[in-house]
Each structure stands twice: as structure tokens, then as C-alpha cells.
Image (cartoon, each protein chain N blue to C red):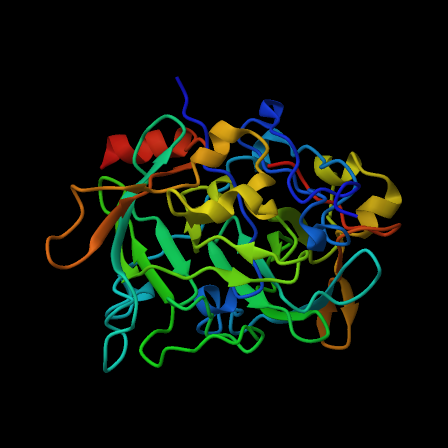
Length: 241
Length: 149
């Protein structure tokens, strides 16, 4: 079975930074990934503005997942931070960044998650923040655990944090996952490997960062996120600011 | 020299933890109800998907997770002719983009004109009762038209 339908396909740089949406090793793609070629959009519809979110989208402790309950969650305390940029390297300001993740034991606070690992009463696993003028975001959380999933025999997801981002434009919308350096499960994960270009896969892995590590408190991981081109609207915005 | 973009990954089955903590499916409280079902290639409901709607002119935005029948439900502006839509789900490694025409366009529409009648049909919401219905089919004969990013 595995020979006919390998969980992980060989590298293929021709995919650039695109993910292969019908990646066979990720079984759920089979009946869900569109089969027909995508239809090109007329030029006028390529640069539609995205929604703008303000501080009112945020609640206290939204960017500190370790302070959302009475007590502190179990696990390895970490600080995840970085910049949100467009393809030209310009910061994306005021971008809404939303994260969700499993707890340190690899369990999500979700009815559908049946993994027999303990829930943590002090961890919900959701956060959000807005990027600052330099495009920076920052979350304090705990390192999520790996967990099993039913995709194939003895399948385990590498530890990851889900990220959702709204840039300025409709085309800058991104939902992705951040992984941790040195995780041995990455080599076996079909979702990660659906990004066929190894250089592009590297962009999904945060780096351990002594600079953002806080002594006697938390390990720092840095992860920059690059959205599609900001378009002419971004330039105008920056010039009139 | 442009930078490579961060690749997309699936929203997974647990997106509700992060993305639908509070209802956000009302683009206009005085609007009309738009509902529909998200269906896979076998016609089975996708019960762990999410639909986002954006109004380009007014910058109104909403999103709604699908229920056990694959159903999503919005309240959308009456004065709006078309909404942009994004579809997310477990098994979708990248979100898909489509458009919801709330009524047939008055004049020529270059986007619809480039499609076959059957394809065009997949982008038109149909009136039903007091509201509108718009189903999204990921695959198959009547698959919804999705657009390049």
C-alpha cells in the first residue's frame, strides 16, 4: 500500500512556494481538493482590499496564551515572534494574526479531538494580535505536543502552531502552520511535505533565537511570514502616513 | 529581488478554536440570509470547513464554520450584487477562492462571460423563501468554479 501511495513524495523545486493541493499522501485531499484548473481572475479583481481590524478585535491576554486562566498551563513556556512582510520586504502593518494549537500533551480543546491525552484546564490554545508599525507580532505560549492522527499507519503530526493572517489585500490572506526546528516527525509528515520545494518547506520552520529568549523565563523562537505582494495600495498607504 | 512567500498549510479540523470564538457571520444586521452547504466530491457534507465572505466595496467581512450537514449561514447586505468568498477545510492545503453572485448581473460581466453556462450557474445564489441559497461543491460535474490567486 505504502509503495503505491507514498506518504511523502520526493522533493520537487518546480512547485516554488506553492503547496500541492492534491497531495496524495494527505488522504483528506482526495474528495476535497478541486480537480479542475483554477480560472484566472480579471486584473480588476486581483487587488481587492481586505478587511481592516482594529484594537476592538482584541481581548486582554489575547497575545499571552499562558495567562488566559486562573493558573498557568503545563509545558515549556515559549515566546514566538517575528515580522509579517510582503514579497518586496515591506512590513505589513496592522495585520490580524490569529493562532491556535494543541496543549503540551498534544491535545486540542475541541470536541472532535479524541486523542487520549489530558486536557489542561489552564490552556485554551488560542491567541490573536495585530502587527505593529514594523510588521512585528509576538505571542507567549507553551510548546505544543505532537499528536497522532488517522491519516496512515502510526501517523503523528509534528509539533506546530496554526497561523491565520489578514494582510491589506484579499490576495494576502494566508492560513498556514509553524513548525519547530529539529523535529524528527517533519521527515514523515505529508502535510509539511505537500510543499514540494525543500527551500519553501524551510520557510515553515521557526528558528530558536537566543535574542528573544528571556533568561529564567521562556525560550524564544523567531518566525517571519511573507505574504503576497502588497500591490499599489500599500505604497500609497505608506506615503500618505 | 522578491522574497518567496510563506507556503499555505491546511486549516485542519480544529480551526474553530482560533477562528470562530465568536459569531462573525453577520455582514449586515438588516441584510438578507445567505445559506448553503459545503460538499465534497462524493456529495458528502464537509462538516469541518469554514467560509469567509468579503464585500470589496464596503469592506464588510464575515465568516462561518460549517455544521454537521455542511451548512453555513450568513446575513449579507441587500444592496450588494456580488461577494468574494474563501473556502477553508481539513484536506484543503490552500484555501480556495470563489464569488457569490447574489443576483444575476444587470449588464455584461467579464468574469461570468468567460465561463460556460454550467460553470456560471455555480456562482449564482438562488432565491429560496426569504433568503438566498448558495452551495459550494469542491469536485464533480457541478463543481463550483474556483479562481487563481
